Image (tube, rainbow, N blue to C red; front, side):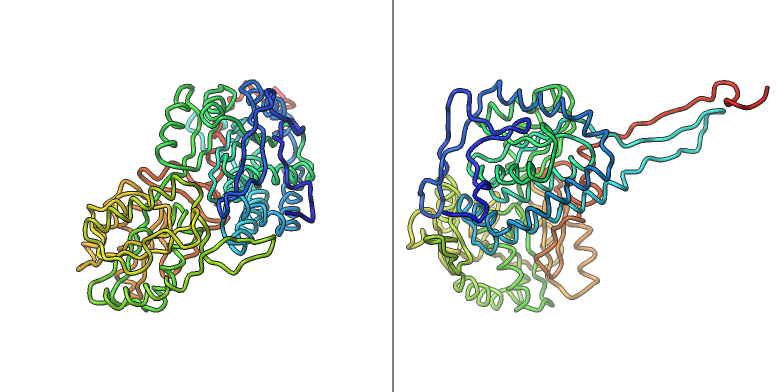
Length: 495
């Protein structure tokens, strides 16, 4: 595939302002999930090279933190402008390695860019405080200080946006970063590194490394000079990151799995509810931690919702994002890898065996490979895996409820607590639902709720901390308190 800016397609890691090979010449093949064709090979760095990236970030930190806020913000804004300037190339790289439709990829690139000017500007409000003193002759206050070197561990489902959402906050606060992208989608991260270099980040401030995943994660998380770790991925791996970071008490931000409920009340506008449900479930081919996995519909409108929802899902178009470099008009791409495809088939089989009613799909797609049919399963029960587990696939499980109390109980019947959705026009229902759902983010009558000004994150097994919004700085700053005692008289005052 050709790009208008050929340097964006990088097959080297970025450490201390240099593009580097693996010291052992070890590489990893990257394949397009839509057709399994080889995209290219990227270097797998050895442990000393990962340590060298931490060295570089550690060396660069004092000068970067002392840069004026305006100087840091100028570089950040230049980075964002370059991302938008090269949006089409970046989207094509993303679609090629991740598989999502090109329209979704373009949207992700714009979404990724939006975090950067937000944090560049919001850093102006990292205020300290003057504290009224309880100590005679003393002045009390606080400062917000950057923590230092930050390790950013990012996933494959949003390979560009999850980097900028973390890195923009850390860099704006005065930290330096080492990014470890998912090994399935390295090229998006390396393209962002190319643009970071063009934007003018000093050497060592922004680094991207790849290596054997467990070794790389442990090397980054266990190095005492890394003072903050921000991870997006599965709850299982997030627990391992938390355990490793506990060895020397680092700051940790975790954005983990989800099992989002989608509650449709009887008063909802059904046509609108169906539209929102389709988008909430099937964007990113269902490979989204905020996907509406458990769709709960009040029994009086359950049959009509099922009919409309199934009809809408049948209209979804499945296929590769690109054929011969040309955009395809599709809604659903492939699953990311064979393991994801296999567990999807297992969950559907489990549900059908336990009594679910298949309305749409439920099988491998005729295209073959990693394509799975958009699927609607009705009459889902808590015994089924698609109810209990995070369902990273284009599978919607639908079930009825008889009362709002039952809907709340079902919605909260999960270890996860990331996103939830409500469709209703009754304020006397909506606000109590918002309060009583054990999920950190609640969208009402719409699917779009993320973005640069909002605190994204989860409760329970869905994570710790928040990304985006003013809260997005919390993982990357420390509050420093001072107590300044006056020693005698002020200089210049006559005795």
